[in-house]
Image (cartoon, rainbow, N blue to C red; front, side):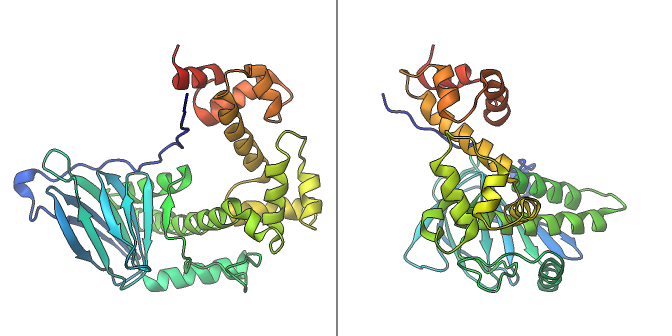
Length: 319
């Protein structure tokens, strides 16, 4: 029996749609909310359409909320990809987006938000980060600076990105007296979360490629190859040639997750794969995934998967 393990989707909160009779246009109808350092745009499309062109004059973070778009890659003009809820696309300034809406209709509209960020705000945020929290050198960032100039522009949202996008939307639409201050703080967090996510995608997903060039890629390779064994932060810090405290702090700053959280998430991911093998008992899965306590394994699995191990197995194979 074939099984597929789907990653959770982190979709920003759906926003109220414009009444059909009040739409100014059926394709990419826009509602805008202006703040000092960014503009929030909510786009909705209510009919099928092809080759719709859209350009922003500043770097823009977009997030899909409803429906489906088919996007033409702005860096490789012959490449197209589906853009779905739970995903974000980082659009450089003055890059043309060419978009198809193959499924949009009055009953099945698309909805997408776009946060167009002031260039000076981006510059000042990066300067602050580089001065106060410098990054380590990476394979694609030789000077070790924080940067949004990253080829990884099509992202799967994680909980942190989804939550901060929801917060920015809520603040932008609301009427709080502290609106501008709150929005500014949330915007800075969004920029940091995006850069951390891009760093994770590079090192965590391509660690084999960079394990001889980057200390963290080398550490990740060790973790992936030894999930069944006891793994300590002390051991990982030695592999990275760093003190334990500096390794822990730097790992968290670079990737937005602690080494311990990373190990646990990878073990839970391994456990999910093992649970698809009905020849293994849940106890077997527990120990093969590197846990030494069944009760602890069950608690953590419930925390990260939102199901107990037995519930997860039933969701795949049925009763």
